[in-house]
Amino acid sequence: MKKIRGFTLVELIIVMAVIGVLGSLVIIKLVGSEASARDTKRKSDLRQYQNALEVYANDNGGLYPLRASAVNPSSLCGSGQPLGVLACAVDPHASSGTNYAYQTNNPGGTLATQYVLWASLEKSDEYFIVCSDGQVGTIPIASFSGSGNCPI
Image (cartoon, rainbow, N blue to C red; front, side, top):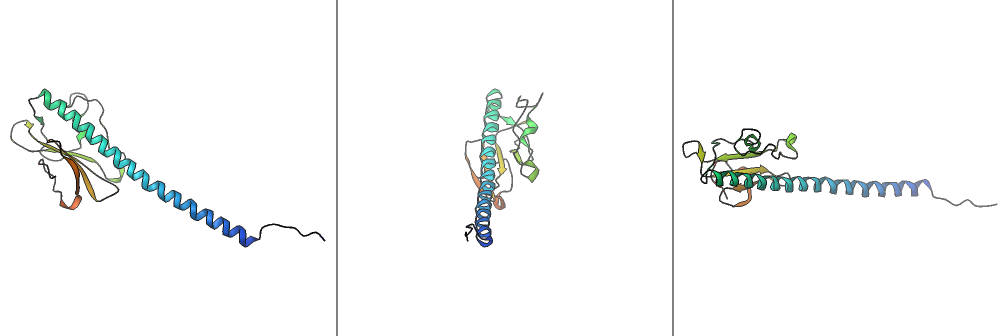
């Protein structure tokens, strides 16, 4: 009599369980890297806004478009808007409630002397901040009140 060799049902179930665990670890790792990639894009986008605002200031005596309360900086873009850029960057995951913000000090008049740009980061409970004086960094969300003065 010939003996048939093969895998038992228990061995097959164990192999499938190991493959399932490894697959779920890979998926979890990818989800974290997507959030990191979006945070990197946010930082890059705020730097692009910073460059556009500095070009504006060079053309306007070192002054910036006045926004005494926080607004999305994309409101400065489009035809007839201060930055003169037709399309501005938007948060890569805006549907999650994360958006960019722009606010200036309010010295009176129609232009400002300082601004702050910020975006909330997904990987931490912090805002990424870009200031008109060139300072860049992060600050805990709980300790930032949102004003036109650099908090860094």
